[in-house]
Amino acid sequence: MELNKIEDLIIKYNNAETSLKEEVQLKAFFAQETVPSHLEVYKPLFNYFNEVQTKETYNKSLPLKTKTTEWYKWFSAAAVILISAGLYFNHSFKSNDLGTFEEQQAELAYKEVVKSLEMVSKNLNKGTSSVEYLQVFNKGTAQVNYLNELQNPIGRVITINE
Image (tube, rainbow, N blue to C red):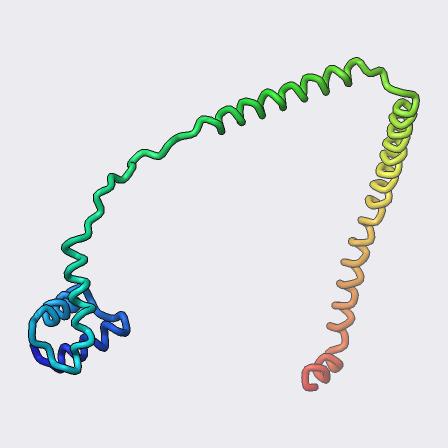
């Protein structure tokens, strides 16, 4: 192999830009007994890679199945039981409770407020229906203004020229 090509490959190797084929070429070059003196520094490195690659292998078996834990199923079942028990007891306490005097007064006040708001809403709707006539009035004034512009052609010519 040409010495220039090997030097270029070493530069690429140091920059981590070599492909696997180029690294094989470098390993083969440094496996030789005679290597130029300025490249002797790299010989132990590549010889180490050759030795390790042939000696080291991974012999342990890889587990393919993961262990499934059943605890999350128990937690979800407990959560369902707690929620249903809470709903049951909450409903039974509310149905047996006749309500205190303050609660009855609060409910009565709420009903009075609802009646008042319904009355305000009804009167407000009457007011908005009478305002709809203003839309018709605005249309009429727009048409009158248009007619006034048509009657004054000289004014229109002057405004166009400006």
